[in-house]
Image 1 (tube, rainbow, N blue to C red):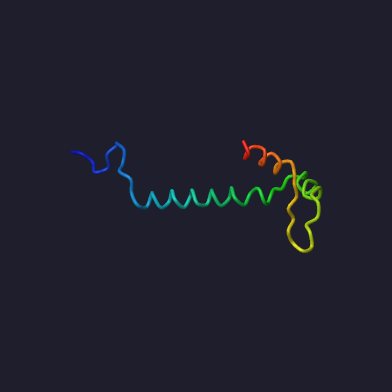
Image 2: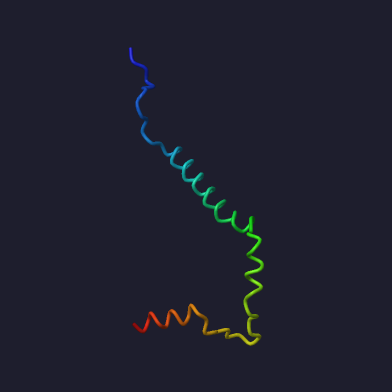
Length: 75
């Protein structure tokens, strides 16, 4: 006599799929929020090194990365 519960692999079920999808979603949310909660001590120092934003908007400055972009775009 053979049991209905075989020892081989079971076919995937909807319940297992939704459980896995919920687990992946929760893990993705945790990874997204975690860096904001645990902030590096040097991050506040780096933000204060930036020049203040202009009062009337604009804010374009010819920084090193902008110069590098112009150099690579013209080639």
